[in-house]
Image (tube, rainbow, N blue to C red; front, side):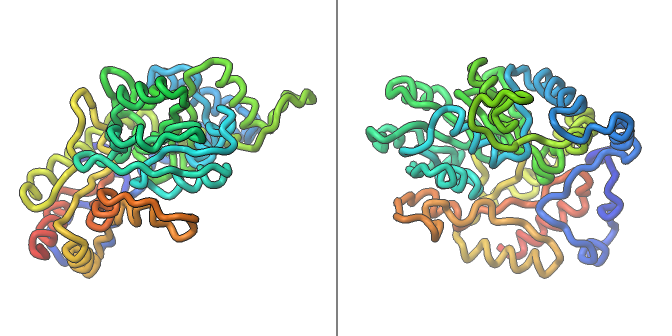
Amino acid sequence: MLGQGLQQDTTTQSTTCNDKIDSEKIFVTRSFLPPIEEYNKYTAKIFNNAQLTNQGPLLLELEKRLSEYLKVRNFQYVTNGTIAIQIALKVLGIEDGEIITTPFSYVATTSSILWERCRPVFVDIDPDNFTIDVNKIEEKITPKTRAIMPVHVFGYACNIDGIQKIADKYNLKVIYDAAHAFASIYKGRSLVSYGDISTCSFHATKLFHTIEGGACIIKDDEISKKLNLIKRFGHNVDEHICLGINAKQSEFNAAMGLANLPYLSNIISTRRDISNLYDKLLSGYVKRPKPQQDLEYNYAYYPVVFKDEKQLLNVFKTLNEHNIFPRRYFYPSLNKLPYLKEYQECPISEDICSRIACLPLYVGLQPKQIEYICSLIKKSL
């Protein structure tokens, strides 16, 4: 059985008929929750020592354990994945100029760049795995270019070697938006270990979550020390050292991370089983991203691409009528956001965004439900 031993979701019990499935709402994801008594063991420590935030003992323990799990140095836990990008830009001294990035991502990638008063320069995507097309980056570099910000979209690896070669040639920083990449391994290393800084998200919808949360993994020790200051208002006690902001995370969020971490291998294996069943049932009906060689995938999402937008909308209509709610990840293509000052053409991203969706994927989703979802998709097609 999928996710054996992890059936904490009482609303997704195994079903015996389509009527029962139709009576339940199946969303694109459902947050994993550990047994409440295990979470309470950590919260009891918070009540005992009365430290709720300000780099408390549970936060420091989580940073240490995640560093060990990922086999990385300079792991900085922060309040969310968006502010992780913002302080990454700040700590690298990027306060204006152009950032080369992808139009195929969640809006936070672009909004973080704009919020820090930089200009996003969009490079179209690879049609096979939907990451930034490394062959189109160099033509977009100008004297104003300060950094490259690719996204390991859906947990698939960007062309890391090609991106780093370009960055070295033009003396550019590389900041990876690795919000989807936690637990993916590329060429024997954690995917979040590449670049000058990689940023993570531990939002409740993610593979591994701390309710809300994020992280920066920093290549340079001195930059890491500075980022540690920036996330704590830029001061140590009464010594004010640099401009900072509040990106400190609470002990209760850290407690959720510590309680979830022991289940991570089972979470990934369960999601792999679900994805393999989808693969079997939908083979020949939809297009799937092509994973890179040397990638150990984390099964963060299950994206599918339909023939066109009309077909996608027909499938959505059918699924929604049966209380099944996939999501259009990602829509629209970010180069078409209405508040951008200019339009930058990215035809491949615009095309993929019009016909891609992510299907339900989470611990507790049962084989009968997956079979039913796939039967409805086939029927709609």
